[in-house]
Length: 68
Image 1 (tube, rainbow, N blue to C red):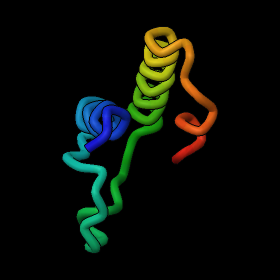
Image 2 (image 1 turned 180 degrees about the horizontal axis):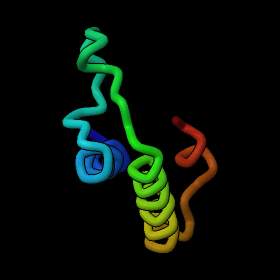
Image 3 (image 1 turned 30 degrees about the horizontal axis):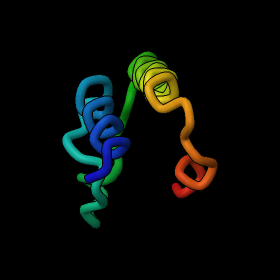
């Protein structure tokens, strides 16, 4: 699992109560009801993680950023 995947999974677990971001091919496991305030918290955490990642890797290549 990449560093970004790990960070996103941790955010999903902490803010959304989602155990994994892996597709499990079952509606009950792949779709979740989420409160808007939880979604907002998760988006803010992801944004902050991106800011911190960029600050620690100031010379990230465009190809690395765009690969996803």
